[in-house]
Image 1 (cartoon, one colour):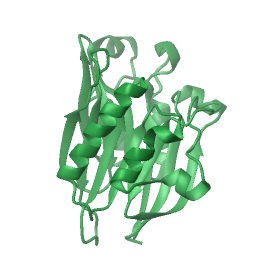
Image 2: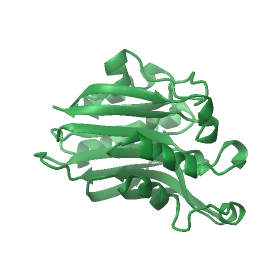
Image 3: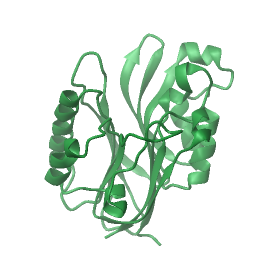
Image 4: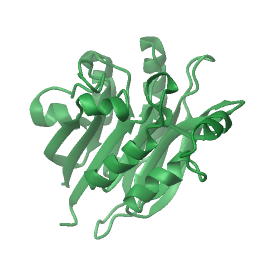
Length: 250
């Protein structure tokens, strides 16, 4: 059905396991293939890193973003946020449908962290309006996150029509429900897991999820199904669980 949308979000931990011990990209690639999502929101995608490219023989020649997009035969947009001598990383949106426009907004709240918000406008078949997808990765401290949420809300109010279907997903680094309450109410958003099960998903650490760090916010959708992809095998994938949701466009 054309009004059904399958999405997922995952912080890929720069494509490596804890302490950069092993390359995790192939496991992440396999997971994306099995998920059958239409759109995926990725954080901490290290598209270029000269030292890791030398260290890991399987490091993709064309970069992590294009490699993971090929798992879904998808288009992708990359928002470069953190830049350092060996390379850079940021957010990525993968889409099986055409990405018409994309924009990366810097939302860093402190010099010690480089953060961004990636916005894609996606052409959906048989929809009267395009889908707006926003991938974010917020800061480690509450004060920084609140500054970033205000910047995101201001951008959305100015750049995205109020009637347009909207999904905001990613690593919010926020385990307290009230920390995001004003943001969601102000933009008339619903969190997919909270809307469907009563609580946001536990997503960190992935092998035994305790903290509710990752979220999927939506506007213009109902929730058909949600799932947390976690467990002991995720030690080889990422320190964050992957969240997925099946949505029905209203």
